[in-house]
Image 1 (cartoon, one colour):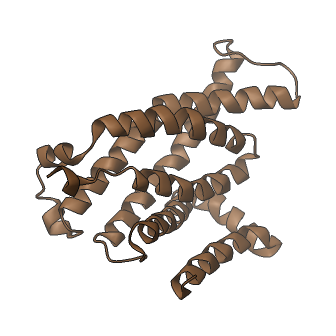
Image 2 (cartoon, rainbow, N blue to C red):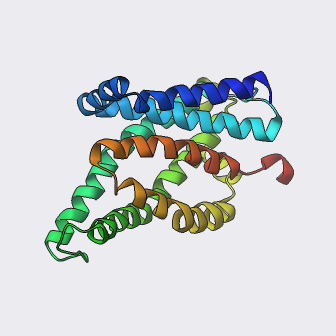
Length: 225
């Protein structure tokens, strides 16, 4: 194990300690309640970026060397802000739909009732929102790569060139049709079983896995040119 690997692990442990130590966890929760979008930006940007750095390490043997790390960080942060409102929209929407008998529900406080509700939230969110989000991330990532991580170059990359470099069959077959039903729906079912104050924490840690999965499914453009 290299020193850089030890550093990566220490960073992840340090972030975990923030939510483990009672004093820092209290500050974390208050900050999340007071500044939900800012905290959503920071948590997702940091943890998802850690996941991407791990992927780059696995692929190349180094955590760095690619372009656009800062731009990708900002994109992840923006997506983290989107997660904040999306989680609330779907959790509140499912509860309202169940109350109106538009979705199945169990009228008691049992674990099975909570599990059904959590599953419905996760299922609907991943069916209606996740593919759009994943495609948006794939497009922005491709823009950054084709622009060599330079914002001035990125904004001049033709959209047709971006779509040409995206492996849509692989995106649909793996990201949409495999990761959503096999990983994300079960994972987010667990997320929505947690109290609301802790759901965003779970989502932040899932961002590490999210960054890993999405990064691993990028098209190998050079092999096709």
